[in-house]
Amino acid sequence: MHQDLEVYLPKFKIMLSPNIEKLLQDQVTKEASSSQTYLSMACWADVKGYSGAAEFLYAHSDEERMHMLKLIKFLNERGSQAVISSLDAPKKDFGTLKEAFESILEHEVKVTESINHIITACLKENDHLTNNFMQWYISEQMEEEQLARSIIDKLEMIGSDTSSLYLFDRELTSLQGHE
Ligand code: FEO
Image (cartoon, rainbow, N blue to C red; front, side, top):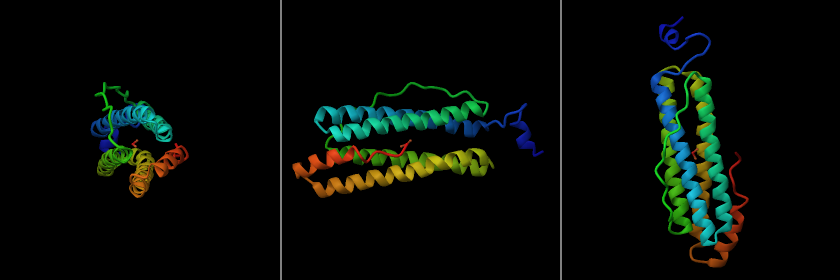
């Protein structure tokens, strides 16, 4: 048996290295923070009368919570105990609808960087199991970034045309992610 593996193989579980465990714990907090940010954004959109965007964002907030839960269960199954941290309150005002989606894109690009960082660490440590688990997240990030970019492009085309904006807001209800 490889000596490193022996260290992380007490009894029946293949445990995480301290470094990978820390990175996954941090990712739990990032996904929780994403969920809260989108929830706050959904409230803002609801009150502004963007009911389609609000529905989209409420669903997006639920998706981020699901991303967090997947990580929590993975940590618990790999011999760790997921830590639930307190979060800073998200902001309440997001400017225009286009600015709101620009901030979503900016946020998701950072999340993608964070996922990439975890995968790089897994490769360095030969943690193929966690690497395999994280591949789902990287595909999800690609879809989320692409969706945010396409929404921003449409909002750019719409500009200040309020009737087109009204129609696009209604369309947003059908543009939710798949999970
Ligand atoms: Fe779960 Fe959009 O990051």
